[in-house]
Image (cartoon, rainbow, N blue to C red; front, side):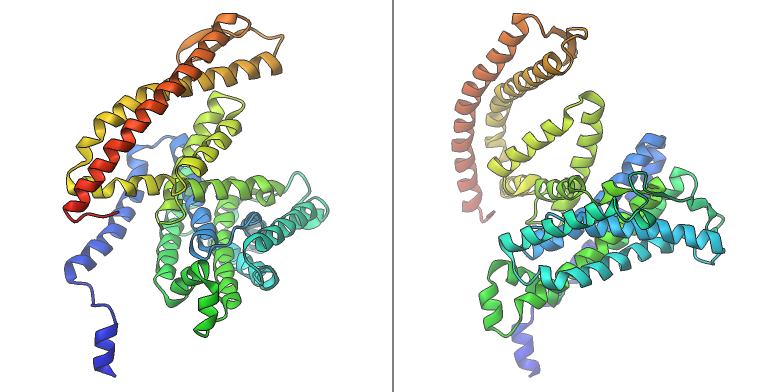
Length: 433
């Protein structure tokens, strides 16, 4: 039996590989500790806190979509319920002077998400594909509508608020300043990421991948795909509840927006844009989407339109997400052939940016002309002033779009040829995608 196991089981990784693996987590912890020293403003700490919450939420969603192949339109249910229970727990603990510190409260949110995922998941995961997506959407709408009806628990439109500083102090921390909340969220983010990565390395994580790829074969070898999907659903609900509890702690309020379709859509965008085929993909997507949404919301009132257009572009041209695009270049970098495509990239970048500039100018002109027709006709874009009532602005936008599109098609065609040559050379050196 030992001889058979030695032939079948993979070899134990060498010490250098293990040190490299653990070094990554140590480096991540050091980066989280050092970030407030480099970016100490209140806005930066708030942004980092939101990114940490989004990372946990996106990775929990990836347990469903990326690992198990379940497209959910209602993952915010477990995020929101975890947030509401966390707020109620803070109020109860503070009112009764219970000896429970604030860092324990996210676990309450996680257990809440796990409870409702276990309650609703058995029926939801009986089917996969479109049926599961529609069931998740129906459950989400049911819970979201209940939030405005059950006012005693959900607080109606105003939601439920709490004071996190009333809980027992831990190491003389009141968790009032944003820096202390950042470290709380950072610690839970690191723990949750490690736990979810460990889950992908377990037999259950491997079976989730098998159910995603071929559920019939999984059933043939003696496993029930329904049970595997259900267990993955419960784990996803648990980590989503932790993310919701951290969001409630950060804002000291939980309202119906936590349960809405916008929240479910945002986590879907983050996970898919980052790349569902890689564990680090949702992390990249959470950082990118959070920073992009905060930046665009300060620049334009139709930032969600740009968000949707970018998502469509990713689905159409880069289904592997941002991480997939980066990993495509890894063989070229390892093989030393990336320099062959770099000039083509630079050539394609200029007309592409011109086309995007024309598109942005056209959108902003139309929005200002239709939404605010009586206001000042001058708008500022790319550091220049444009008059939306002037035909020149419309002509410039039109020319940038048309000329940029035509030139971009030609330059991207040349880039494709250069890419094939560089990839062929890298494969000849033994480096594959």
